[in-house]
Image (cartoon, rainbow, N blue to C red; front, side, top):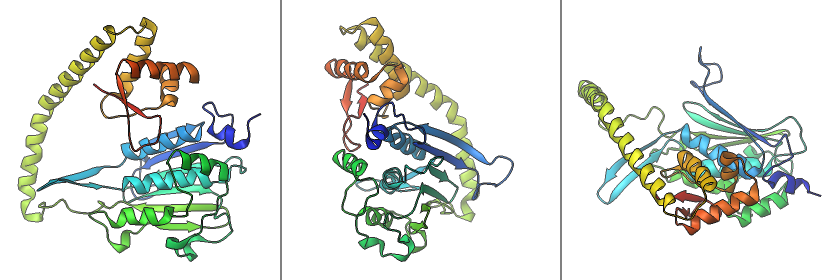
Length: 316
């Protein structure tokens, strides 16, 4: 018999109300005009699937500026990745799963991202009245928290709020007005993460240089078609190399088809887990594990460090 925690973590979770709703809204609120939403996704099932789905949705619907420096490059994401990841983890772990008909929400607007989780602080306090640098660790779902801690997705020392704020304070465009905001009441918990690049002018793009910028944009558009064609050629060549490598291996035809299906979805720098293999290929947990073993044996994939155990990406 599965416990509640086991059901929430199972690959094929029977908990139908374990869901994550994600929306990229058009503008600064949920009713900004004729086109209200630019993107939306609904994820259900295992908490690990919800976590990966939420993380990918945020990456797909936010941008990352960067500029060259003397010794490398400086990245300027709209929302610091570690802060966003920490908030999604906390929303999934600390929500009240006994409250049916509710789910965690991620709402992305032009100037901010809001994450809502059902139920407030476990001890009944209001987070906006606390010193978030010194909040004691109290867990509504200790078994889930323990499992996520063992997978290095979180710590159990009450340091989450401080990590989120520190990630913001290290960012290039940070200012005190953009400090993350935490709010809770008796039935809900909200985190607001502000877009650090919203209304921030690109360096050098002052009013007097608008004409030159327009000319640059035209040049980019002119070359875009050629770049696109070059990109297609590179992708096609990589896929051919990958197919050749599979054909030279001892993998069966049926397994090759499944691996190629995975490659079409996760080539490049994208990483995947056993749950993704199951979802893309339609096989169950054990066969998915065997398929991953075959790909590792043939050196088609390599482990990904820094995103928890069991994550892989294709070598080509």
